[in-house]
Length: 301
Image 1 (cartoon, rainbow, N blue to C red):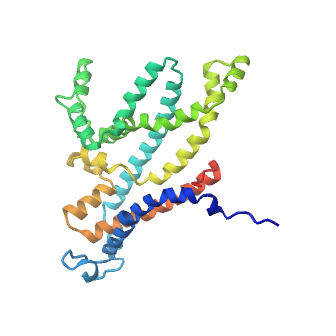
Image 2 (image 1 turned 180 degrees about the vertical axis):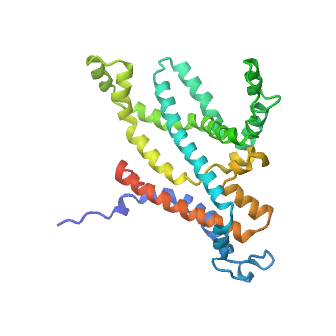
Image 3 (image 1 turned 30 degrees about the vertical axis):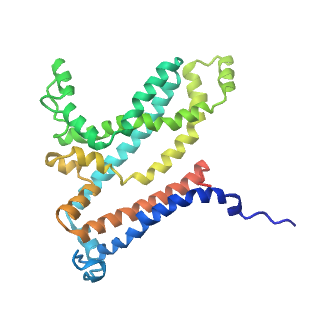
């Protein structure tokens, strides 16, 4: 009886292609992880990792006793959850609408226009938004004033700030996120649309019974994998937009770690919070991958 070939022999080329990236991750991601020992020490930069006194789990206990812990975790999950939800829907809707355009010139022009913000850093985008959303001289409030609406303090009102974060994040990323759905749409068999037309289906019925089922497997896969980002509320965006007026509703785990670790020099506490967040994120990512394998038949190899 002929034995089946070992799987790695079939995929060794893929592993070889991964090798440079794996070496990069090893050097710049895994080797620096020796720094997690700070989470268990009363770290002193002059004494280093091996000379600082050991505290065990004291930082973790202190973290759980802080009155701000619940607020910060709540802000993080709420902002990240809303970003995931609307950031999941917007690319699908945009891809479906763009797919209905028949004029290629318009289609390509719109694609280029909505892709561009993805490549602009939040440092630049933050400066643009601060000017556009300014309460006194911002273009948005000037437009609202022309309709008799009172100025809105988008970046200073806690009630408006979260909504501003969600909307600006979606506007920045939805075009680039639609690329995958547009690729899935291009793979739908045109014969299915022809059959639907023969059966008397209009454009809406075609979208409902042909287009959506054709991209559903991609949507399910991306939705499942996005679960791992539930604790990533977007440090770059919030750091460049928030201020003390909205601190209670906008401070997330990453900005708090930055404040504690770099501004207040509480290295051990900040590292403990960051480590705990990373562990939870790892569990969520591993769990979402298992769901992707089970529900969407997604595997890396």
